Length: 88
Image (tube, rainbow, N blue to C red):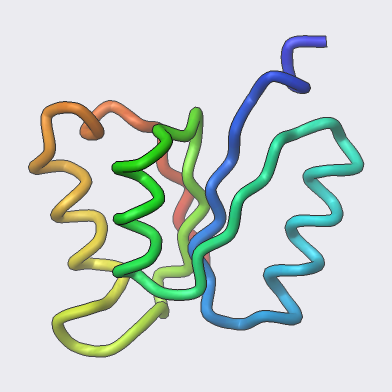
């Protein structure tokens, strides 16, 4: 199954919710990595490009939030085409 090869990056600061999402996705065969803040999320995007990123729109504080992460993602030519799922 092709899904087993997909790498998903979850960027979410609610650790219990992150664990639920991670477990659900892994049980469906996805490879899952987690970042608990926007800064770590961007670092993980740069170090290993995911196939898709799941992002909590309510993440973080001014200067280090979901909107800043999306802006950095879209401004980086090597990352700008990564599919993004945003939720709250």
